[in-house]
Length: 69
Image 1: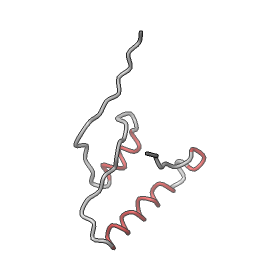
Image 2: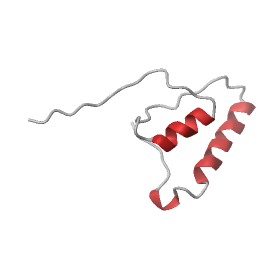
Image 3: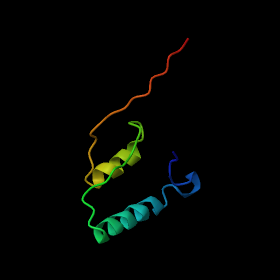
């Protein structure tokens, strides 16, 4: 499994917004009715805001816990 993302040097330049736009256009061409955002950490506020801005909602929450020995 791999994760796609915007390299730090290109973050906050608008490239992510363009990716969203391209995905919406592709979904419209192929009559997609929904999508999956995958795993977004609760602490990743920008990604969660973007997902909600596109009409998405959190339907399941996975948490990672660390045990200190």
